[in-house]
Length: 203
Image (cartoon, rainbow, N blue to C red; front, top):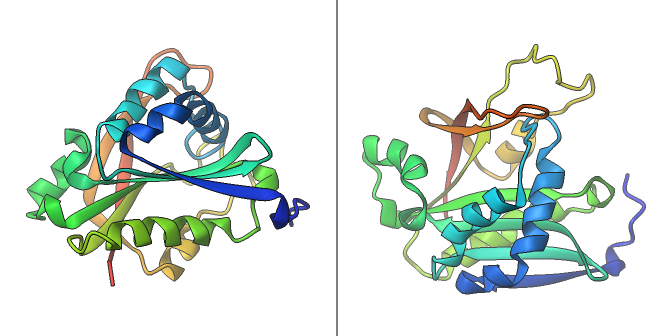
């Protein structure tokens, strides 16, 4: 259980070009959180800024950030699928989805001391409310990396988030998959990782 008092936290929302104001802090937070299993991500600030530029160019993109004092300790992002990159769009195009009706949820990242405060639910609430306001989107989705159960770096106490996602109304869609590449920890070469999408109908 977290010892951080919720009253110490503040929140901020950014859209579109507003992302650029927090590129460095958001990039550093992504790298810190995604080093852990299952992503095992060996990231760089330059790569992160290039990735985040997709969000900065999208007028309807969304960032909800959590601060403890001046420090960003958590964040979650969302973007219309129409504004995402082609590798994210491809499985939906192949499956016959109308891209203009889908809002894609990017990362939800939170430093360990701030977990257990209900912020995971807050992240979904904020993104779903943002997507809903446009009156255009009928589906929301996100993707998650697939690692084998016997992966050598899987912690003994690792708990996947499937039950939490089901509770939020999301269903795993095995027919919707992308392949993203990044270097694992202590590796210099990017290797492909299978990503499976989860989806729910936006009420």
